[in-house]
Image 1 (cartoon, helix red, strand yellow):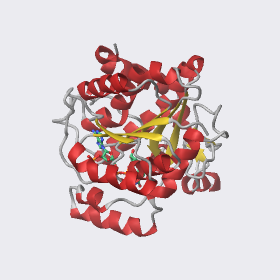
Image 2: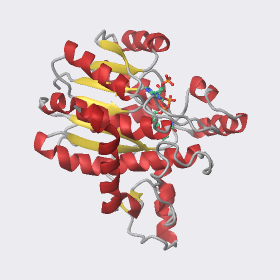
Image 3: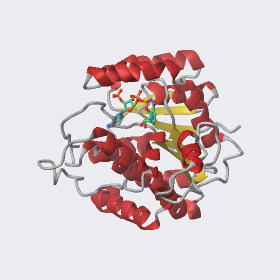
Image 4: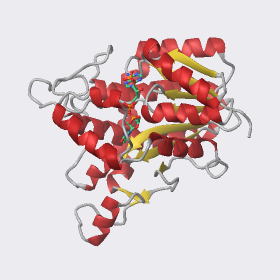
Length: 319
Ligand SMILES: NC(=O)c1ccc[n+]([C@@H]2O[C@H](COP(=O)([O-])OP(=O)(O)OC[C@H]3O[C@@H](n4cnc5c(N)ncnc54)[C@H](OP(=O)(O)O)[C@@H]3O)[C@@H](O)[C@H]2O)c1
């Protein structure tokens, strides 16, 4: 296989780090896009040592900051001729967080990190990707989007800048789920938009994956830390997910696949056959399985709304 250049955001920990190790072990060139260089150095050294591949670079990127994205992309362009694979792995999800936090651009931090940052970065790097002979983008989504099997669940876009911060309770779980659902939906529209350039865009629905101690320490409340620690016992290792990232981004099977939501077993998911609001065995099967996603994912109007919000939030920074 031709050696590729891959950018992985949040590659200093968990799944991102395991993915960086996987790509570099297979001989590819890896750019670890991380917000804290000093903290990420040991991960870079560990990956180089384990993979015996020294083409593993560390570059500074805060995905929540539009200026940081621009600076990262400019530096990347100065030092690189092309790009084959872009993996939007980094995410904000502070369990137990109680207070609204905002990005340097004044956007609620979950939305800035999980949706608008990846959107902007994708567009700023699009022309480089378009020059690759097999360009692929992968968005890290989550099984959390199954909450949208509830017909009352809706993505709320009315508080992106904290317009309602004094009246609306901060709910990190709702914000995380909404932003990841939006990222999943964006996958469809970007796949369409990028077809003429041959860029494939897919999303992977990540189930419970073991979290690092450092990630658990970030949790704001002990209660959630205990639950996550218990979940870790049955969770699959990050290397398992890294293999899925690798397969979607490099295999012949996915060479012409675009605009799909894929599960951990590399299976292309499809929309549930259970209509919204209907229960029964079908719904239970879909809730516990990983073959189907909720009808909401294919809501054309919402997909367009998400695309438009991404465009307006980032438009000053795209050029
Ligand atoms: N683990 C699971 O069970 C699970 C389930 C569903 C989905 N996922 C998704 O899988 C992906 C990886 O998660 P993980 O479990 O591997 O968690 P993790 O170990 O906590 O990794 C998250 C990474 O994102 C980075 N990050 C966060 N905000 C950033 C920012 N503004 N700029 C740059 N990097 C930033 C973190 O950097 P720092 O180290 O500097 O904080 C860290 O490297 C995420 O998209 C997550 O939503 C995970």
